[in-house]
Structure formats: structure tokens, C-alpha cells
Length: 416
Ligand SMILES: Cc1ncc(COP(=O)(O)O)c(C=O)c1O
Image (cartoon, rainbow, N blue to C red):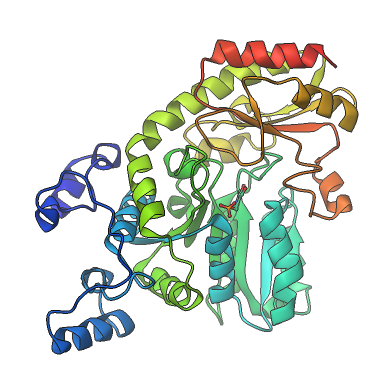
């Protein structure tokens, strides 16, 4: 398998990597291992497997030691190997939701008395977990603005009473729903600044770009996080999450995952492994459709503030970061209709091909209203600060015919 890994691109390997047909009667595809437990050949082998899973040793050795599906199972291993390969890191962990990946990561790497430095905005669920749940466990947070300089962010942390207990830098880039970008390399330098006495972990939510258009580990991120419900799953038919990084960090994360019991199931993992086969293909079509839809919106008289990463040009605030970090503009758009909530709702209620639903990264185009839906649990003053207005529409562009999408959008805008 390692010879394959060295010779071919991840794109070509997504069809087979992490699955050995010889182990399953030469089946070209990995069957679903719908089992809760695995039989040991001998008691001695059972003992040895437990020692491997709970003791020191390489992750590959551990992966061979199948014990119990909450700890590990073959479908999970396949999905994790594929994501690690795409992200260019040693290992990955899949969870039964993006929020399970995020909450397990935050609980593993921040402890009572610690401080989290977070970007803004964050997905509403993450924002709420950091602001409302973690304080119960003695974890505080401080928020930086994407426009702040490195020196300003360092000063922000240093002047906080818990500044010397920074444990996690948590960023979402592009951010949901505003498409603002965070400079991962700069955050990695800030991490180094605060890492003298204690290791600080830099975690990046890469849901918007997926493992195809952005690789945070190449820019200094320790952990790359996904709602795999989105592009990785990609068909609006599963809920899953993931985190990738070094073997050392993944070992810790998988340890807590086993205790919390939030690993991805055999069925979810199987669907994920299958979705990896077409991820590249889908992402390219998503991105080319999004660019056409964004161009249409840009000149429409009933639309303003079109936020689309692929539109960034020289001189724009985020252009340099975009050029360094992303290989395409992705497929997430946000824009304001002229007016407010009433006009936004009129637009949404008149779409027909495009589905009015939250979530993103699926084959069908989805449109929603962040202010009253996915970001509604973010405090209203924080929403307004980052431009989440009652007139804002978020659109996840799918893989339909771009002409049909534009026809549908045009019709709905004309009803305002
Ligand atoms: C950027 C981002 N991160 C994390 C999540 C949470 O993922 P899940 O819904 O799979 O738990 C979402 C969900 O919309 C998201 O948009």
C-alpha cells in the first residue's frame, strides 16, 4: 500500500486506498462490517490487542488490533486512511457528527483554567459550545477579528488574565457564513509565540474548502477539522465529522472518542469511504458552478455584498491569504438582497430547483437564512459585527446545470 501511496496521486488512490481485498475474499470494495465486536483467536491475542490499543506503539499496529467497534472497526480505518492521505498527515479520526469532532477536540486539548483563542464568526454550534458549554468546565475564550494584525492578536491574548494558559487556537476559514479568511500561517506563528511553556494546538475548521481546495497542515495547523456531513459526505444523506493530524495528537483524540463513544458507525464510515471516490470530481463541478452563479449575482440590481472567495482580486483584504492557502474559490456564497428579512424570505420562498434548507456541501444547491437559522444562536451583536444581517442569504452551490440554477435564482429575485 505504501508503494501505491508513493507512486500515485491521492485522487487516483481514493478508489482503493485503505482497503485490502485479500482480507475479504478479494472483494474489490470494502464490505460493511456490521458487527459490534471481533473474535480473538486466543486469550493471549486478546491481551496483546488490548496492550496495543491502550499502550504505546504505532497507530498501524493498533489498527490491526480489532477489539470492539466503539474503539475501532475496518470501515472506520478505511475512511480515516483516505482522509489522512488527502490532508497529507499521519492519521485521521471520524466521528458521528461534525459537532462530535469539534467538541471532542476541544475537550481533549483544553482543560480547566485554559484559554481558547477563537476566530469570528464560527459556525453557530461551535460558537455556542465554546461560549456556553466550555465555561462550565473552567475553559475561557477570547475572540480575535480576522482584520487584526499578528501583534494585535498577541497583545489581545497577553492582556487576558488567562493569557499564559492559552491551549487552543481555533479558526474557521473560510468562515461560515461570511466567507472571511484567517491567515493560518500567521496563526501558526502566534501559536509558536505562546508555546514556550506549554504546547498550544492550532485547529482549523476546513469544512468550507474540504480536503481538496485547502490543506491547513501545509500552513502550520496541527489539527484539521471537518463537518464531513458537508463535502466529504456530499449527498445530504449522512451526518459525520472528522479531525486529522499527527499520530500523536490523533492517539489522544481517539482515546477520548472511545470514552465518549462518538466514533462514526460502520454504515456512516462506509458511505464516507465511498464518497471519497468522487470528492475531487464533485468539488471541481461545485466550484465551477459557484463561480458562474456568483458572477450572475454580482451585477443583479436586487443583490449587494456578494461574498465569494473566488471573486477576490489583487488589492482585496483577503486576496493574499486566498492565493497562499486555497487552490480554488470553493462553492459557498453569501449575499444580501436589497431590503431585509421580508425580502430575504420572499426570495427563499420562491426558489424551486434550489432547496430551502440548512447544511451545505451537497450535490443539490441549498439556500438558507443564517440570521434566523444556522447563526441564530450567535449573540445578535456578534452577528451584526461580522455582517450577518437579516438580508443575508447563504447558498451552497451544487452540481446541477449552472444555467438552471441561474434561472431559478433570477425568478426568485424578480418576486422581491
Ligand atoms: C463550518 C461548520 N463546522 C461544523 C459544523 C457542524 O457539523 P455537523 O452538523 O456535522 O455536526 C457545521 C455545520 O453546519 C459547519 O458548517
